[in-house]
Image (cartoon, rainbow, N blue to C red; front, side, top):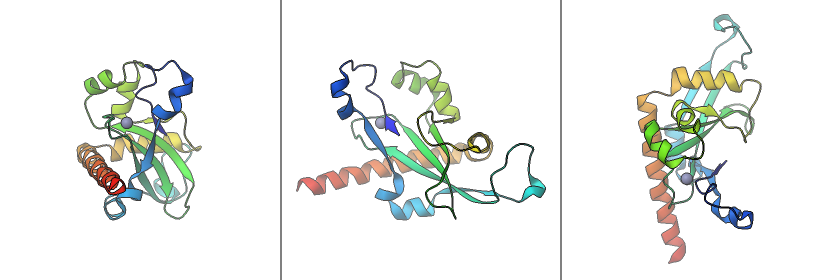
Length: 173
Ligand SMILES: [Zn+2]
């Protein structure tokens, strides 16, 4: 996942690489907080299953990633849905943003549909998905993406940036 805030302004592809910033996992910078405050979805057995393809019963975590560019104010999170007992397998990759749609209309002017998608949560077109991705997106929109989770991601994003700043300062001195 990359944060592409500069992609319209740049025409020279040669320089593109240096303007694409990685989204990095929250837990690499703030392991304790990430562990304590990760949202987990419990999926039961077939008895309470809705129609359609269901992922296997188990616990699925929404692992958070944030943009590592301190000059960028994108205010978005990238989430990967992973099963607790299957490390490394990505069940869905979701983009979301906690601000109002009007904020993203300013920060993402190149794509008319993007602001609406980011405030509702949407599947990331470039990153890993699975046959259950649509299931997890709908579960995210119905069960996870509420006001308290928006505020939590906003707070995690701030903590993440503070920690990033602290590490930059440490490197310099
Ligand atoms: Zn960014």
